[in-house]
Image 1 (cartoon, rainbow, N blue to C red):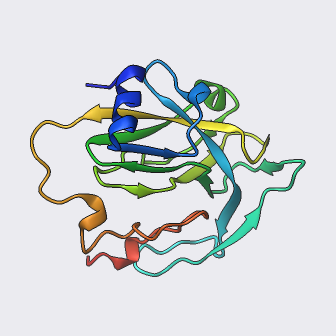
Image 2: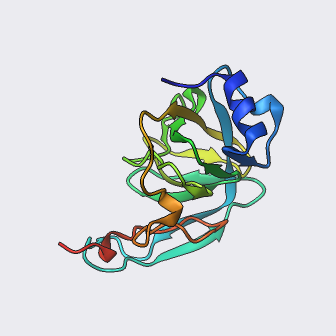
Image 3: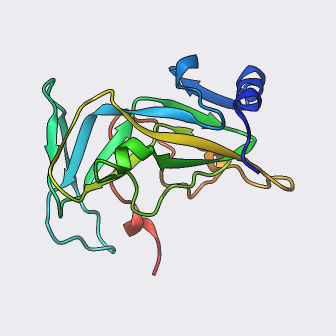
Length: 178
């Protein structure tokens, strides 16, 4: 079950949901709008290999914006740092973002209970489109959890995305054994 705006506020008050910075005007009926941070990244190599560490190059979005190009994966980051200790967070694109032909995640829209960080975005576009740091890019929704949690994400020894960051983070698939 998705929790409502009133319930999100209650959970923030209890400290089970943390959103920094928090702006009341970004709270929707059952979601919270998040914004594009000032950093993007692209992979150094055009061909990626799931078994090796694929390095990225970070760059700052200029004040006059940056034009996304089709057929390129950009990694972005949210302005907002979040913590979710009692719910499952989902990050979805805003409809206004989608209507510009921008996807903000390839597959990783669900967070884990205990995720404490900014969100890395897997951004692609269907046609060239100019984007800006600070623009609304997505919305977080929170689902209730049924049952007790045994291991929270931020306490897992093998969690790959626990290091606090303000920049996009590349895939850590290479850390898996396969």
